[in-house]
Length: 393
Image 1 (cartoon, helix red, strand yellow):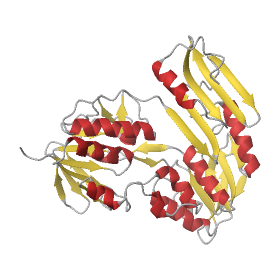
Image 2 (spheres, one colour):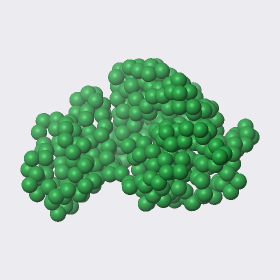
Image 3 (cartoon, helix red, strand yellow):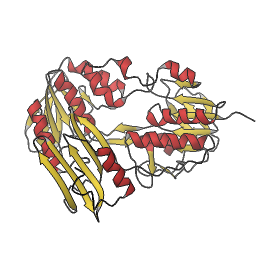
Image 4 (cartoon, one colour):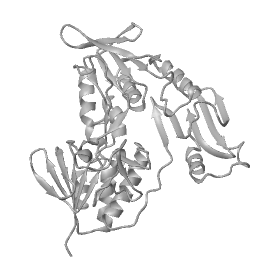
């Protein structure tokens, strides 16, 4: 029987988990992971610790070279795939090399979205997504005292906190009237903001950046807001969300909407081609969270190796540390206050359960995330909490 050739584009959690799963089911197949990055699979969530100088680059790496050898996986770094011929089951690298496959996984991840702000393309403006971004931010930090963060999203706040730990003055400019608008309601966001202000962060909410300005030498020296206010800064970090990397899938003629559309087996519209992680859209949802990417990697890998696994979707939940403060959110956070809610609020702690028909449909926690895993399980199971209602928080 002919051994199968598996190609995986992307060296993140989805691609790496898929490779591991394939190897468990197919001990003889040839598995190659192709990555544009220059280091093996690493903990992206720890990039801020690297910026703060608290973790070396080596310690970021989750899978050392020995692991790839043990699993008999070929890892090809610094490799960009420029073309996909879905019918011929062939990839072309940017160096013109042709690579044939029996099964392909697109785990190409996402890229930082850069809004159309005047001056955004100049020196001293950064987005944090990959190790190369973290290296560039760290290099610029040595020449900067004041940092402006455009966007109050998670990665941006974490990068800002890393720079604050290096002694920089950090100002966050957020278009929404609250921080972490996807994870927190207004009361939870206010609690987080107060805690961060005590640490030295400054905030400009409901504010829009019009221009990033630069000095006569071409270096960033601040921003101008829509109302005309100016803020000084020698570096700007943009954290305005991410977009899936769809170029390869689109060039190969695969069905795409917000992401590459997949079925419950994580198959794309092309035979033998699967997608997982930040690039995949399942039942209209691009989840963009680590647990979902890991689960999708498992399901895609199992099916690529001839299994019968189904992806059931994931409860959208995040458990985060923002500037050292525990924050968690799951399901419908009900920012508009339309549903029944149970709230505990005291000191630095804010916790809310969102309830519909005696079932939890969402929760928000700031300052204390005990019970979070139990509550997310109840959301997933749609458990009746009539008898537990007053004790869960």
